Length: 78
Image 1 (tube, rainbow, N blue to C red):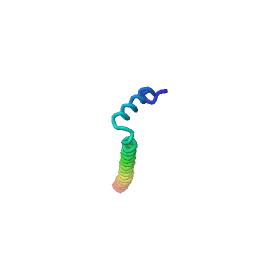
Image 2 (cartoon, one colour):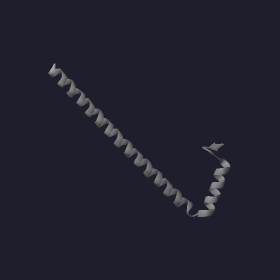
Image 3 (tube, rainbow, N blue to C red):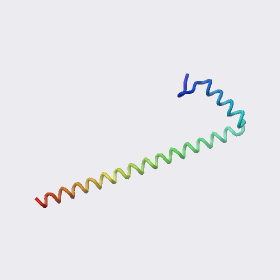
């Protein structure tokens, strides 16, 4: 079984090395920190996506308004 480019043996070796380097007491606190970081990253992505969608909808509305005013200006000149 493979998870991405890594197999089970590679993941086990990485886990053992991390366990030896940091020890069993620090692993839960590190996992908690990583989880919080991922959560904040996703929250930031959602905010950016919302900002972009808001700006796009503003541009679409102002573009429609500009097109309408151009059309009404052309009808007045003709």
